[in-house]
Image 1 (cartoon, rainbow, N blue to C red):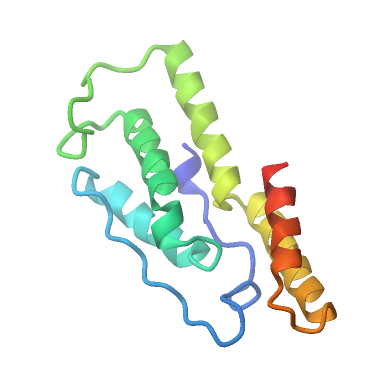
Image 2 (tube, rainbow, N blue to C red; image 1 turned 90 degrees about the horizontal axis):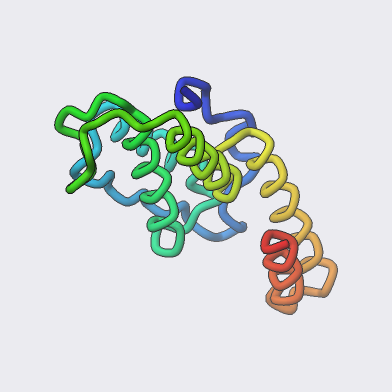
Length: 149
């Protein structure tokens, strides 16, 4: 399963909050997650927290962990409320895994996605600095356009 690989490739401090900003605290893991998934939740927020906003990105991260829970197969106490305890069909498993991979890439939970997001953020910050400190809105607009595609 994809969760066994380490989350960190970007060196700590390489991508972080903008200068003068503190790192946000991570939201608590959803209560229905089993211990293993709750540990992964905390690791994801620790490793990717500089790229994520707990208020804006928490629903996306929660959806990712809903998918992890569906893929887990160990439906002990960590089962989603109302979820079936029957194993997923191979077709459904592949669809759920594909959606999980897409969300991992979107939030920077994979090494390649994290490097891409880090480069985009740094480019936006550099663009803001080059504009003479106009607040960086143009650079951030470009970043949003780049991420949204």
